[in-house]
Length: 411
Image 1 (cartoon, rainbow, N blue to C red):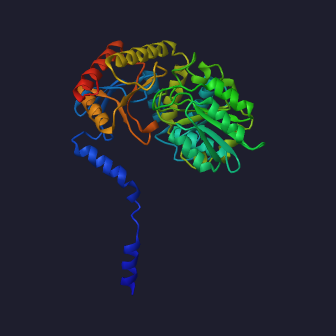
Image 2 (image 1 turned 180 degrees about the vertical axis):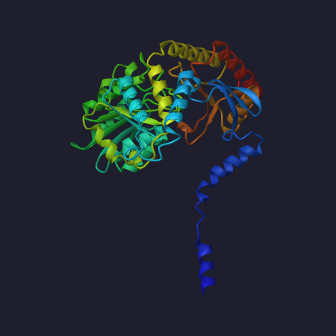
Image 3 (image 1 turned 135 degrees about the horizontal axis):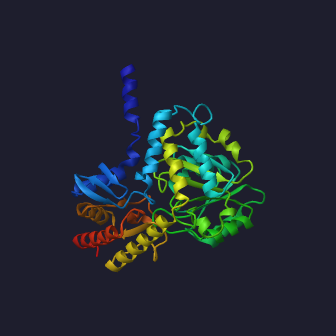
């Protein structure tokens, strides 16, 4: 009898992995064509913010989000080493229990100073910052109006929070207003936007969008992950650059881009914001960042306050690369350089992967971005410039793209 029951269970048991079969097949087809796995690259040694050893050869890094090149800053590294000596390797606890050290308070104070805001809350990752803040402030009965191209962490925060989610066409102010107009009177409303959208590197018309949001009584959250440190007179992001930062209720950011380490944060001027430390589950139920990480982040943020020359050089790199790739015949994600991200549009995944590999053979690493992460099912080679890329390196990169593009038949 027992054996019969076991057989029946075996026959009806569903393979929980079957839902991934199309993706498994796509990956197998890609690897069968002889292409190196573009999602399995190992960096054997990192030599600087712009160069690493990959597959035994020196490779220029153009896909790391290390926008301000802070990962090898001597002061940042020294702060991390000192914190390791003084506080050990980790906190082994949540921020609301034993996981708040002097460094956690110091980095939150640095963020408040950087943004000129009253409150800052640091999470263990940028993903958790979006997950935690969005799911906590917008719940059942509330409405979230967001750009269709929003980051996965934003969508996951919406899903976890159980609010009614209303997406609108990318960067379309009129479509956003149409959605807001339909929301019932008196309902809680949160509009979520990004300063820089990470796939194409385009910026949002935040000033106009925020004005519309406020017209309908909505609170506004702006994710400045890809603009902090670089865009705006003081590096506070697109909202600062468009002179509307004071109208933003919540700014979300990350330490894993311009700051050069790992972690996430939210800054706000809302008078009740501190209650979030007790009600935000991804904050309460996660171990806090190691002391060495918050020490490096704090030092980096304070240095970014006075990084005007670095910002100017990064803009110069962005303009040069955009112009060079366009003149070489590549199709780019934006007509003009709008950020440190320049996306090169590929005809399809197969040729995109071949181009990625050809660039790697040239000694250049870029990101291969594919559906469903990309808008409109595009395959992209995503270039992330760094303030530490020299003018000579940028010219080298243009030459590498040109040679690889001709080899693969893209241009």
